[in-house]
Image (cartoon, rainbow, N blue to C red; front, side):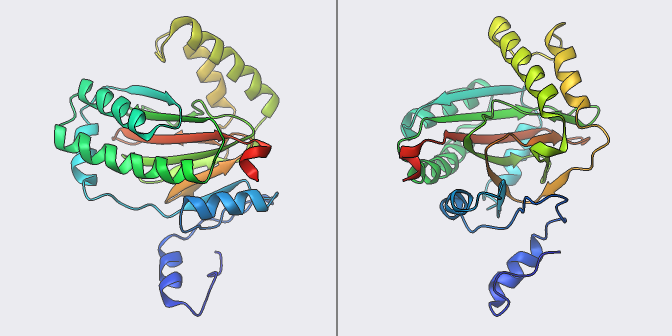
Amino acid sequence: MFAPLFPSDDALCAREARLRLPEVRSRHFVPLSDQIGEGVERLRCSPDLVAIEIPKVRPLFASELSAVVSDSPEFCMRYSGRDASALGAAVKLELRSCGFPSALRRALVDYLSGLFDQFREVTPGSSLETFLILRRPRSRSHWHIDHYRPEALQFISTLAGYPNTPFLLSDDYDRGVFERYRQSISQRELECQGLSLDDEVLYPLKAGMNQLAQGIEPRFVAGDLLFKGDELLHATPVSPVSRLIFTMSAVLTEAAQT
């Protein structure tokens, strides 16, 4: 287990005790960070760091959200841009089409807009890409990487469903094989304009990608996750619940880092 950053500070010690992380098998350390801005700064200043955990703030509407998500259809919503109002409108439209109650739509949009504003503030000049993904329960452990980009700062938050995000670092699996799968999957998704697991071409590709992580013990992170560079392979564990995941990514440029 990791020692507290400031042993004399009782509040910080208590917080870290609640969010203990498993030992990491490689040189890449996954420490705790108070918020998105601090996490981005530490990632940029520490070349050896791949990922930082940000303690999750449980929203007041979490129970109601989990109940609605469990009955909603699977979807993947994408937004590219830096306009928080446009993001909110896109999220609201998607949630309404999936049957989310109006009060929950407003609360969720406000919550996501706050995360988006924090991320945008610390990535000036970068192009932003945002996804809201609802995953249905899987019959088996399902590893996946969705739309994450190399050479980018990337943020994951599980809003509802399984509380922890299990992941693998990029040196835990065969990157060359993974890159070939990812290129083929991206081409197929552009061709069919969908994410259907029933696609006779897409499903075998995703099944092959999943096998890259078979037999490897993942790291479980209790909070939100902020990382950079190569993608982190993360999973939907075997669980009788759906997962609502919010992700943001910002291309790393020289202008954005100065």
